[in-house]
Length: 158
Image (cartoon, rainbow, N blue to C red):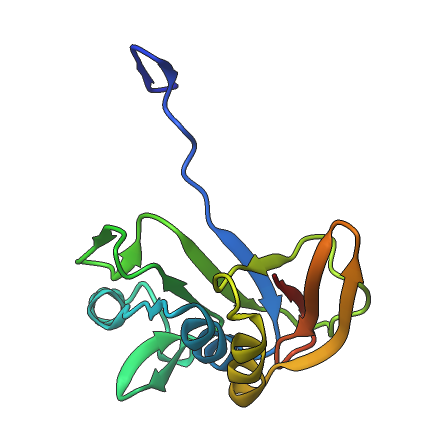
């Protein structure tokens, strides 16, 4: 059943899921890149382990806490989150482990907007976090830098 309000159907909740080889390292990079918080699912995982609903081998230790082995998310620090599960309820990126390597150009990417006059400093900061510069673009429509995260996923800095 669709929730509705006086202005129409409620907006759909979503998250962006990014396939990767190492979810924890991607969460480290993107958490730092976006100034987002890495979700802490330790209490939820502990409860699942106690109930026998999750095998221990499906977890890893991450920052001295238990995390899911194959997925972890980062969330905007100002958005609400489920304190029981540690799961964000707003803007989130979820990194999930997949067996195959990245094989082509992204069909979807993030554009980062650090603010007027801050592009070069932001690019240098991101390089320091492990990103690489793929190319600098200067067109009549604008300028931006195409970059890749540590696993090769493209993104742009405006």
